[in-house]
Amino acid sequence: MLKVKELSVEIENNLILNNINLEIPDGEIHVLMGKNGSGKSTLAQTIMGNPMCKISSGEIYFKGKNISDLNTENRAKQGIFLSFQNPIEIPGVNIFGYLRTIYNQTHENKLSPVKFREHTKKYLEMLDLKDDIYNRFLNEGFSGGEKKKLELLQCLVLEPRLIILDEIDSGLDVEALKIIGEVLNRIENTTILIITHYARILKYLSPSRVHIMSEGTIIKSGDINLIDQIEEKGFK
Ligand code: ADP
Ligand code: MG
Image: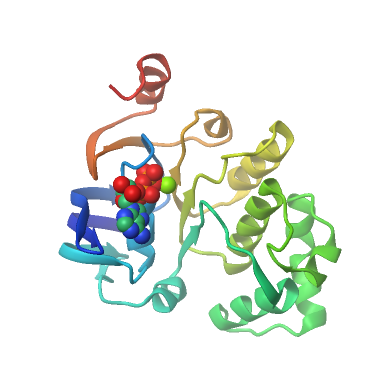
């Protein structure tokens, strides 16, 4: 599904990622961990095609195709989704209009406002959100937990093939964590890369592999037992 091959990335002429290799087969859940500043978000942003992240060598393959030169919009249309670590507030962008637009841009059968409201009712319920959220502006005045729920709502609307979650669990209270964990657990037939600092979200998911990043490179990969070792001994 996703293959990152010998990838090195610069931001403003600083080498941030150095020779990353990562392969996630179709349908698997992988975890990416590592200290702050180790390059996890940069890797996620590079896979999504953030133009700030300049690929100096290596390639990214998605469903067997080299996507390294595609722009972000086309990567999204291919089925890649990234939830932001720090979702930005965009006053003036109405959530309902925004969500319906991204749905209609990525689906063959376009939905009217009425049909879209019906179609997404179940998603709001899953996330324990009320539909008056649709009248608000993107993330404006949202709590940390609400922002993360809105990220996940976008994910549910888009129905991507590859979901990259950048610290979706950071700053959540126990209840919001449970809701988000259970929603992720219900998403089927999807490949997931979950970036996290904590084992607590993994209670809801069954990852097949865990990767540890340090100083811009993946220094160790292993099975779920690696997480227990990290909880015990830290990243050393
Ligand atoms: P993580 O997500 O693992 O905490 P990041 O990918 O956010 O790490 O950051 C990796 C490194 O890249 C850090 O040293 C950070 O300062 C640097 N970095 C990230 N974004 C920028 C940027 N826009 N300009 C310069 N350096 C950046
Ligand atoms: Mg980060």
